[in-house]
Length: 195
Image 1 (tube, rainbow, N blue to C red):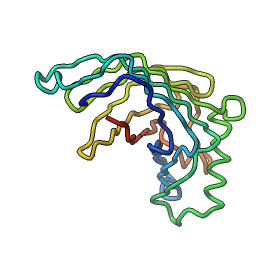
Image 2 (image 1 turned 120 degrees about the horizontal axis):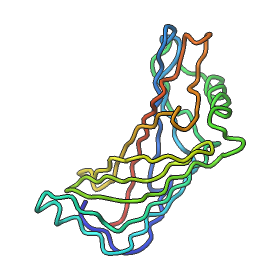
Image 3 (image 1 turned 45 degrees about the vertical axis):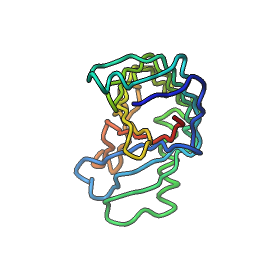
Image 4 (image 1 turned 90 degrees about the vertical axis):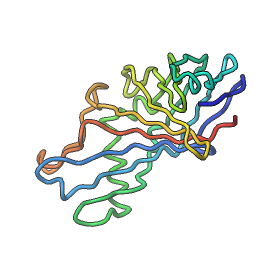
């Protein structure tokens, strides 16, 4: 992933975007929407403990572990509904407000409004990296693995998939269970880092 100088790099909405994608299923799926939620308030830090140079992995096509720590905090109270695709009708502002309200209980937002991620290892191979760490949501922490890559324009993008029930979160269900939210949620991020 090329090189990063030693030091701390702040990340957040000013130089990045963090989105969740949810998908509907069930007999009444046509009545619901696939959603794109965006974290409007989040912050983090990338702490490079030693000169991080991934050029060796590019040349030799080998995996190299680099000394980088990543910490992120996400305010779940500020998840905004950015898009809703599918469905019988387009999303209204009332729909968006209802969705935000419906998220509060299953995510445990009132008791645990902040979700956190802390990395445990970063392995680089060429322009791609695997970041392992612990994600804490709704009072539970479990390991996750992020697939990260450097894009042609220099931005860093990444993704992972979170299975809600693994964190004790019961996926939304409506219309007497005929409309359900898929248990797996896609998480995507884009960052612009110096270097």
